[in-house]
Image 1 (cartoon, one colour):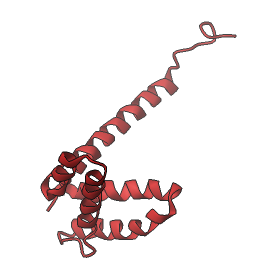
Image 2 (spheres, rainbow, N blue to C red):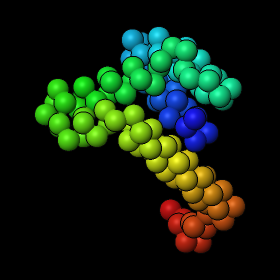
Image 3 (cartoon, rainbow, N blue to C red):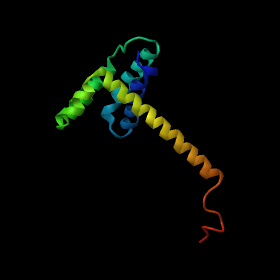
Amino acid sequence: MVLFCIPCLVLLFYFAVASIFVPKYRIYIKDGWGCFIDKIRGKKCSASFDNRMRLKISSWFIDRGMNKIGKFLYDEKNFNWTLIIIGVGTTILSVYLFIVLVQFMISPPCGPETCSI
């Protein structure tokens, strides 16, 4: 079982955001959610969503001449670890930016005496 179902969760989040702008990605949201729930239960994905996405992403890179990246992502273990690293990295970045936002809201760098027009 993959560590905390992060690869399916990252793919689900990506397609949720992408489906706002590109309607053809909306069909993947249902499959992604089903895969995420199956992995939480400890089962393999019934829809094989993660394998379909792994094959599509690796073939996308190969079609564009990036053969080393495509072959790297074709391996399921490499694909899962790449998505885990992306998921953890974006989570850390989001938490950091939220902390910066809270600090900015509590004490803005510009006071009435420093940034007055």
